[in-house]
Image (cartoon, rainbow, N blue to C red):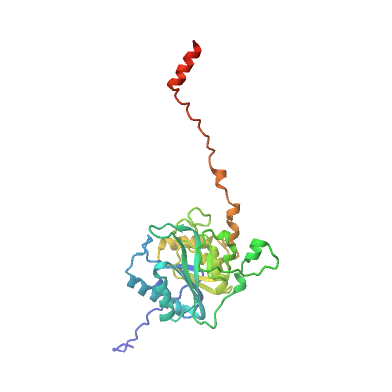
Length: 332
């Protein structure tokens, strides 16, 4: 009631976001429309604040502004997760430490694993080692109750890959912090239950490449995350839709999903990508990347590809004065 006794109309409530689609807009505005505890799994691959050229987002924020913004959207992710929900965060070197501290010390997440995604086709850098990894944090809200389906993500062990032993253990072994130049030559070093993962980066020449987004995750990497941390029929959230890989994999694996994307152009293309797939479709990319790349012993030999070198004969030396004199003497 107003002061003059006339009833005021209640403001219209904003409807919650519909499932199984991507919603275009600012992630903070859209997350505010999601009910508490409505999502079992969230995966976020946010802008890294390294100056990448997005079509609608400024990736050059001041450091404090970026960290504070990250805290705001991660707090919303925490709110919409169920009590036993899981949050995976992919981030680069520049802000990995800061965002881990925000997530664990300020927002109350527990970090179960600090996964290193090691990929081939690294990003060339100047005056430092070329970048060939990203950080993926595995956070849970309740360290005593969360989903982790180990049987859904097992891969053949080293003994099976290398020796063909039928008694092979289904888990692999993780080497120490060693620089590995060719991971396919050390398949025993990358087990499904280890926190260093090997997946090739989705490069421009790959069939899997969407062609319109420069930061595309491999479907098999998202497959491992979604299989391990959710069940069929549960809801997966991606607050930074990007190329739509999280949503595409969620749909293929029989999960419900909600995607958020700031760019209208990206959102439209994600819609087209989702429309072209059905639940149960196979994931793009090699399920076992160590089997899809040749080991050094099976690779092309350099000597087979080098052009044949034909040695040129040295030109005859100029005759000396002594030789000319001897030749004339014999002709007399």
